[in-house]
Amino acid sequence: MKQREKALKDGGQTGMWLRFVIASAALLLLYNNLGKLAEMVVGVLGFNRENHFGEALYFFVYEVPKVLLLLVAVVFVMGVVHTFVSPEKTRKMLSGKRTGVGNVMAAGLGIVTPFCSCSAVPLFIGFLQAGVPLGVTFSFLIAAPMVNEVALALLFGMFGWKIALTYMTMGLGIAITAGVVIEKLGMEGQLEEWVRQLLNSDVAESEAGRNISWSGRFGEGIGHVRSIVGKVWFYIVLGVGAGAGIHGYVPENFMASLMGENAWWSVPAAVLLGVPMYSNAAAILPIVQALLGKGAALGTAMAFMMSVIALSAPEMIILRKVLKPRLIITFAGVVAAGIVLVGYVFNLVL
Image (cartoon, rainbow, N blue to C red; front, top):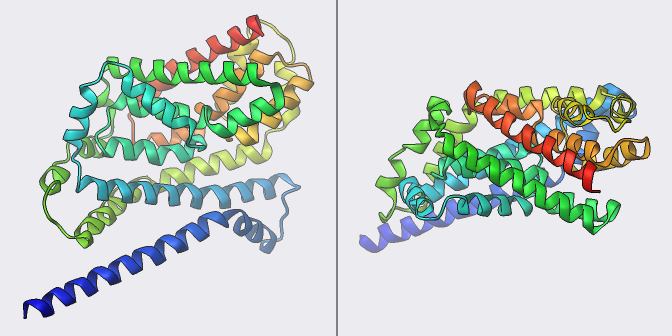
């Protein structure tokens, strides 16, 4: 009888792993072909990317599933991780380090994760879900879109190693400093209630270290996906929709005309202009190059680029489901101040 039960259990485990592999492969295949899918949808609907609406539609069809797939994957993995290591243990491990060490580690992780700001939000939620301190998660959220290998490689190719190195140093400085400041302000109370419940969840504590089956761990991951994705998906669609409209309709010449003079107000103006935009480093750098070719100052163009990548309005819309307005304003204010400072430094030194 026991041998039969063991055989049935082993068979169930094998089937579960097979379903997991098939589902993962299908999602990966879908993720890798989102560009083709978006092109097909635009074509089937009778539009093309040469007009404003067609480009905006392509952006929306591509970005919405991309961000949602990332969110599902990250939240599922963190839900499984919860059954091994509790948020309380994670917090204790990080609290034993000197102030700023966790921020440096998170900002460094951002260098190797080439996500746009909205795509970084799922990992931001996953970090909170794992019990990582709030300031550390913000260091990652800022660094991931702004200072990653894609941005650095393109900067090196377009402007040389000095500008790429300066950009990396200052971008990491913004990410680390902003995270430390937010941590020191003690703004965990400005997280939405459902996020605070993740921080204080005792589910992982009760499961961690217990000899539970993989099906139980996977069930925990699926439960996290249903809970978290179910709360934020609408805000993701709304945020990406705003970004699609901006991406498709805001003309490049409008930007150049306002940043063409190296006046004292050009840097803060560039930051304000960049906030409503939405793009990643790979997409915005050619625009920055065009702006420089039309007379924009280097620091002004870099400040514009940083604000587009790290402070986009669509990102703020998505974060609103996670953060209360006071924390969003604090985050945006600290990062914007850092970007303005970087813009002035670029203009003065380079």
